[in-house]
Image (cartoon, rainbow, N blue to C red; front, side):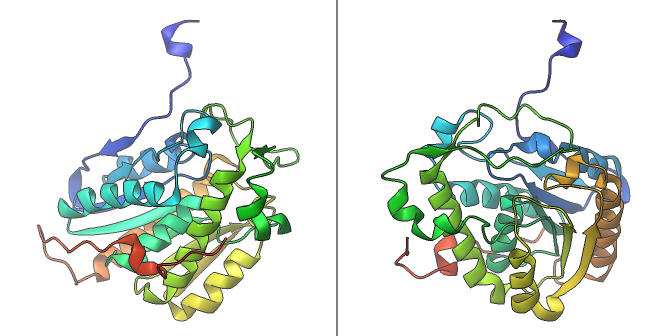
Length: 280
């Protein structure tokens, strides 16, 4: 295999920005068992438009399912939060964005920090599988399960590592993350844009219903994706996601007067979004 044909390895992505959009930052979060590769075309299109972009690689991701089983939701969140804070410190306004679980992490960040806006693709806040209700107990009897497979997927395939199995301990952490995000949605003051695939075997419609109910008028746009599955950033509607999110960022950058150049903001812990005790 030649060097030019070697597929890219999962790694964090960062771009400093250029031109008139360089002072607008966009931090993007990938999804559960994914990597920055799943949102890389989105990140690269934003970078081409001159935005400053950051896409961290979350702990336990880009490697294998055994590493994922040893990570937890706070580590995932704090890694993205650190990327957001670094980008926010060197831009005039900073947006957050995400795919699937990354959408939940982006929304949690918006609950804890004064972001300029939120753009999420098929954000996860709930599960199809009812067994997740007892996942806190089930994980002790069943270590892994097979990952969810979409029928006849049209999204491009990425090499995110070995996730041929899904560790139930990590699914339990995912459930905790969703709970923390839902409890924090009332704190989101920024405008939110959602892209939702009509056909999504991974995230049920109840996730969007929760956002509609809890965000109210802060949910300023919902875009139906008619030709894509769950990983829509690599699918047939990707170009629409890129163009409409760019317009969203431009519109709300122009109207955002809360930040001044070079200003910083105090950090708050993810623990503020949830009670001290956690349910299974």
